[in-house]
Each structure stands twice: as structure tokens, then as C-alpha cells.
Length: 298
Image (cartoon, rainbow, N blue to C red):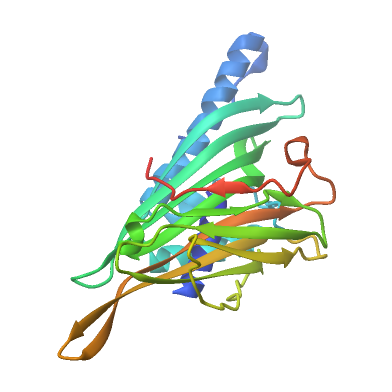
């Protein structure tokens, strides 16, 4: 869930318990089943606490030495959670656990997908929708007989916050999932504006960091083919990056020889580009873009 929290905090800038048991009395299968249930309970409890915005219980599911792949420790992550929940307390979260692997040293690795959704009222005439998805790997260990989250790695993620007519767009924002430091890559944004609508957009890049800085935006009219592209060079600090697409929609009302422009929709979509020393097998060709569409609530 921390991946989603990190991205949502960036957007803000723009706009049961496991139990100990006696292993000598249980078979290997029973131990595995107990551990599996305990890990599942831990992660499901995270969702329950997050949906209730119960900060203390939520943070208690993490180990005191927690540090994720972006370099954030528990202190920084705690600030991210507080920042997010102070601005948005109606977000609903969910997870899908794909696989759990246990190791002999009382550690475990969990592959999962994470989701979040929220309806965001703005004015009586315009409302917004927040949707987010992330595929992640969690790393856990037993602390005093209880499983705790010690780290995580985000494989890919996409977050959208869209208002008005922008919420109905089929947005495709693409970039490589992984690049090496100092690598030139292309980010692409594609969507078809509503009829009789003037669309502008920008694509920016920023490092994953806290506090999050606002990336500079240069808005351009969407080309006739409805595809906007921009080249970036990945940082050499081995810091992961966000690609941020900003969208604006306006419509002209002509009456008595006067023209009035009305904002009909706007929003943001963000995806992640991981900066790594060596590409994984699935990313042997970094020029092959990771294309994402509008995330749907699940």
C-alpha cells in the first residue's frame, strides 16, 4: 500500500494478528498453513486499518527497521500516511495476494496487487475520481513471534486523479518499467478528447523522494494524432522516477460575438519508472514501453 500512498502524496503536491506456537507439536504442513494464515491476516489487517484511517494500528504492522526500495524508512513513511489521510480520508483500499514464499530464517516474500479508489467532489457541477493500481513485492520477518513488514519493492504502478469530462477519457500513458542510470527513454501520452473540446497536456518527470517536489509543467496542444511524446534521461542517483501526465479540457461557448472558454475537465495520471543498475529479464529491452490505461476500481 505504501506505493499508492507515495503516488497520492505526489498528486496532492499538484493539486488479525499472528500468534506464537510450539513448532515441536506441529507438522511441516501445519507450520506452513499457520504461517500462511498469519501473513494473510497481517496484510488484510493493513487494509482494514487503512480503510478506517487507524494510523496507530496500521503503522504497527511494520517493523521498526522498515526501509523500502525507494530508500524511505518508517519515519518518512509515517509522515506520508499522515499527509495523505489528512487530505483524503475516504479512500477505499484492497489487495490481491498472488504468492507467498517462506524462508528458513523466519522471513517471507509476498507478491501482490494493490488497489485504491475514492470519489472526490469539487463543485456542484464537477466531481473527480481517484483510482490506483500497483503490483508489488513485500518482504516480511518475524519479530517476537509476529510477522512484520520490513520492506517492499514496486514492480509497476499507475495512479489517476481525473475530474469532469477527463474522468471518461481512455488514457494511455507509457514508459519503460525499468531503465539504467543515464538512459534516454521516451514517455508517451495518448487519449481522444471529447467532441468540440480543446485539449492541452504536459508530460513531466520527477524523482521519487520526500518531500515530493512539483515537476515543471509545459502544456502543449494535443497533436492531431492525439499522441504527445517527450524524451527524458534517467537520473544517475539510482533514484526511481515518476512520469506525470497533466491534462486540461476546455470548451468554447460563442454568444453574441463573444467567446467564453469553460473548463470541462482536468486531471493527472502517474506511472513509475524504476532506475536499476541491471535490467531484469522482463525488461531486457527498455525501449519497449509499459502502456497503462485508466485504472479501474476493483
